[in-house]
Amino acid sequence: MMRKCIGTWAMLVVSFVLLFVFARSAAAMPPQQDQAKTSYTIPEYNAYQAASAEKDPQARIKLLDDFVAKFPNSTLLPYIYQVYYQTYFQLKNYAKTIEYADKLDALGDKVDQGTRLAALYQRTLAFNFVFNEKAPDANDQAQKARKAALAGLAILNTLPKPATMTDAQFAEQKKAPTVLFNYSAGLTSYQLKDYPAAIESLKAALALSADDGVSSYRLGLAYVASNPPQWLDGFWALARAVDLKVTGADQIKTYLRKQMSNYEQPNCDNLVDAQFNELLQLAANSPQRPMTWSIPSAADLQKIAASSTIVTVIADLKAGGDKAKMTWLAICGAEFPEVVGKVIEVIPGAGTVVLRAYTGATPEEMQSATTANMEIKVEGQPEASRIQKDDGVRFSGTLSGYDPGPFMLHWEKAKVNAEDIPPEKGGKRTPHKVPAKPGK
Image (cartoon, rainbow, N blue to C red; front, side):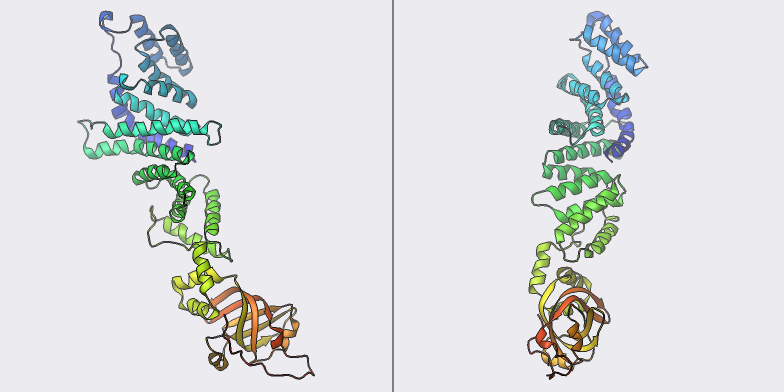
């Protein structure tokens, strides 16, 4: 995932490097002068020129090694280091690229800012190619890489605009390296568990490159890992990464859905699917989470469940909209210990008796009802088939679903209060009226 993105940044940044950074570096190259006016000897200069002009990268490295062995204190070392890191990058030896870019950067004020920026840029690219978060020295690598990325940003933000460029052109030229430096600062801050800094840097990268799925993914991880977690922003950033089809999108989808489920902890986990799909659709069109989008936490759902009765549940579900969604998330799969209702229809079956009944706010409302608003599957109580139409029943059960229209609340694993089941045929039957106590 990371390497594909960095490769894209590398191509985008070429124009910046060629037009500005390398132009400044080239201007600072040592000209061939009279030996009396230079701080280096003609043999040093010739050895540098030979190494720089060598076309074969392996042979070039050997010439550079020979130069350093012969002239360890040469004033041409800044230029030698520059050729070193560029050659090692060409050879995809990123560890050595970093080593020699660091040697050049360590010279500080002995080299001009454009030369330092070119080294820091190449180092940052190399780091992203080679970094392994599970390496034993990963944190040490991250510390150094973050320092380099932030130094690159600082130089980039202070470089003067070339006279041949408009402000817009210069801003466009700086855009890609700015994104790269910010992304790298964010990645390394995350590795170091500095999540606020990671969020700040990754948001800065996305401000210039909103469709960068890798930065969105890293931002999502940083939000989730924060203390306390910034769940909603994290979910949005991860969904955005999935929508942008980053490498590993399927694994990110699995992770995101699992985190959403853990955040809400609904009894009916399948309800998370609808929220998950809605989130993916919304995030595809908006890099930033709108304040109008949210999903309830487990604590939110627990409060709703604790304050709900069957009467309020039915009212909320009938109302539809967000209220119905929230209520159903809270009470789907919940067990209710005692619900009362009036039986409208009894459907005996093999091992299961289905009661269609009506419950309401008052006994009078239930007594007058002629249509059912509940379907109750009674299991393990075949004697419940003796219940008759218009009987009042008390039962416990688990809410499993509902139909919005015509409204019907579905119960499973229900058990009827034994006192409400008529005796076997031949026994004395007492009609069972609707209990005076409404369902809870």
